[in-house]
Amino acid sequence: MHAKGKSSRIRKIKTNPVDQCIQVIIYIMILALCAVILLPCVNILALSFNDGGDAARGGVWFWPRVFTLANYKEVFADGSITRAYGITLARTLIGTFCSLTVTVLAGFALMDKGLPGRRILSMLITFTMLFGGGTIPTYIQYNNLHLLDSFWVYVVPGLVSVTYLMMVRTFFEGIPSSLVESAQLDGCGFFKILWKIILPLSKPVLAVIGLYTAVGHWNDWFAGAFYMTSSKLWPVQTVLQQMLSRAMAAESGEDLAQMTASQAIAKAANMVTSDSLKMAAVVITTVPILCVYPFVQKYFAKGAMIGAVKG
Amino acid sequence: MKTASGKKARMSSGKKKSWKVLLRHYWPLYIMLIPCVVYYAVICYVPMAGNVLAFKDYSFRKGIWGSDWVGLKYFKTFFHSYDCWRLIRNTFAIGFIKTILEFPFALILALMLNEIRNMKFKKISQTITYLPHFLSTVIVVTMLQRVLAPNIGILNQIIKIFGGEGSTYYLMESNYFYRILFLMDIWRGIGWGSIIYLSAISGVDPELYEAAELDGCGKLKKMWHITIPGIQGTVGLLFIMGIGGIFSSGYDQIWLLRTPGNMALADTLDTYVVRIGLQGGQFGYASAIGLIQGIVGLVMVVVCNTISKKMTEVSLW
Image (cartoon, rainbow over all chains, first blue to last red; front, side, top):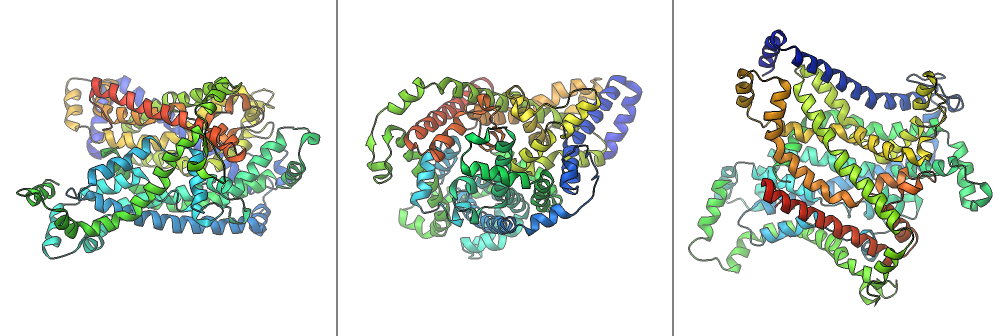
């Protein structure tokens, strides 16, 4: 296909200058897009390695001017951030594992076309995509379940996602049913079929959904900010979010006299949290995702394909 | 697939199997379904029923079901309130940006990527454009705050190089709010959104392109007459799924982008619900507003789906 594309391009260069022009424009636009995406990231990276006081003068572009590792040292020295890291790691691992387990089990069960009640269950599950309990009834339900202020508020609410469930089911349905049938004839029960036949063939879909779920956990700040009063159990994104909103409040030029005591303290704390320090925290928080990313990237297209088959 | 359903047909043909026989065969599957069913019942359907809170004066002691009915009081209060139309307008504006204005960009990127024959370039640019999708909203807004900072942010530095003042505090000025929102979404989502279109494009029959080439069609013509019609089903489905969001702004991003400066535009129903409900404790009132949004979203999806089904046979169900 590659070679064919090349040969047809060569032919067209001779015949069609308009196409050649379009090709050049497309290359330029994509290059520009990549630059716009990468440059801010590089800037942040440079800032995180730059001395905080120096960075405040401005003029740091894509390379640190006064190189230092102090920002990173300070971030790691901050007990609240390292603890938040632990929480994030724990919720990502536990949450992803639980989600995958429940999703795989349900996806396998819903795959069987003969299962009585399958249609109605699928409909009820899909309906939750269109309509749901609002923020407040959900909050009250979490409270009734004693999820608030507990670690499990990170895990339980996002346990199953309709999209991922349908992706898993669609993928399972694509596995040749002759495999399943011959196993059934050999007297394998459903659990054994799932474990011995379906799962080993499902690595791509598990990788994709596992990654999506893990990233969702890693990046979530909302649960920590609103369902968790004690900052001891905050994940790192919530800690960053608090830093951010403090900074926004402090920079908005609100009159100090009008601030409550706690706001004033927050403002004072923000003066210490220099931008460079924050950028170091941003980098550390993002790096783990970027480390996993290349390994799973090859599955993305596949995942999108599975998702596209059934919306 | 066919054999599986065929087998089931054989199994259920003849006489209808009694429940006992079915249960003896299928019980392991029902056990597998238990966690999922419990999850949807407890986490999704109970709060859905809890929407009746919109008609009740919530008392913590009595719970949702025991609280007193107040009828449509909250709805009346809301529609008569000073904030009402501002919030609705803001929500619609953001919903419109997110579901309509931003919609074509991922498609355009996919069409462009599809034209690239240099596989290495394609792969690298895909890797780069997918990347921002994996950054959390908190991270992106923190970066944004620094990149757009007055004087020291790189955007203002660039403006200074070109002779501008370079002291604009973009996040604090409401007239930049929609632009920031829009560009942030494109920055984050364009690459990721293109994946699904790319995979749809790869499903278009290559013979069609060859035939068009023989007829002397250029790139643009092929794109317009073959690629786009070939993927219009996918485009339609994604659009219908997205349209339900036209009356919501999402709170994740808006909550973080809100500053005292842009509050006039950044205060939407979603953030309002969080603010007065979760932070202010007005549970009934906040539920009423949430319910309005939920119903509008549902109606939008159903209406668009019906129209689309009639006109193009593209349908979610």
